[in-house]
Length: 178
Image (cartoon, rainbow, N blue to C red):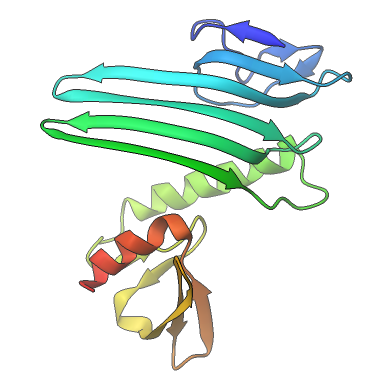
């Protein structure tokens, strides 16, 4: 176990138990390691006072062997002006059997590239429906309920079907004006 403040939180270029660490935001908290020295979870806190409010959160995670989070308890608290938003969730993430920290880092780099491209897209015409897919409004033919918090989106006369992530469904409905 490693207890750390923001300044000493291990990130890319640092080594813990003779293992390189991945690039990530520095936070205060505790990191858990298994007998082989691999990170296997943690308890972190992040909080910042802003000009017109604050933003804070905490996360307790347990990782798959040599992989990323499979269980996460997450709480966020943010305030902008008079509006305060609190949320808590317990998430179970399905991870591929052979997923590793290195593989996850490659995915993060790809997603960063998607975010950079998104900056050039008109948000009135394009919407990111999940971590890896965006849709253009004019190609949406049909929308169906997939389950309680997910939608199935049919594109190009139903030749392509995509699904919204649970975290993006509400914003997607707002974007569509539903």
